[in-house]
Length: 110
Length: 117
Image (cartoon, rainbow over all chains, first blue to last red; front, side, top):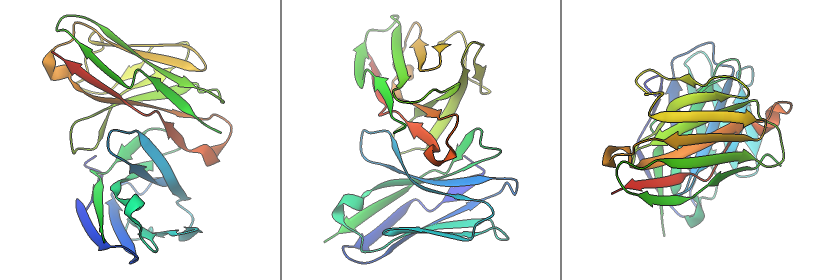
């Protein structure tokens, strides 16, 4: 997905917060998603946000959307070892095809 | 709710043979399913959009005669890799969108690891 960019790696200490950033280019995006992929598995939808929202919180997950800057972030509070995975940011227009970023590999260290 | 089952999870086949991968929506109907290919440590590349009752829409550069897609019912789409070669070895993932409930978003299967020897 050349339209969606993410940093490739993030290392975080257990118990700290993780922040994964994503930028997208298409201002007509209507939905933005965060997916988690564990080794050898499919993608698990973590959360999504509509383009008319600024923030969404769901338990340990907080999504922030800056539509002006086309910037999306995912904050994971109290990061645990089970949070180690690849996280994909994705956008869709009119709820159709998804464009994915390259994925951010999050490593949680003790 | 919104579970997608993908089978097989892993398959090894010989060069020149064909392999069929199934993607089923278990508790919802999906008029549209998507097939992705993922190379190691890379993102998902959309291969095609599978439409129930009509021909699939392939992305640029994807050979439709090589990757046959059939979406004969509202709960099943299949991807057949024909005359497989070692370069077709990859991780293939399907996804589906529940028609009526946007809260489901896109649900993904668990993926199929194809190895062609």
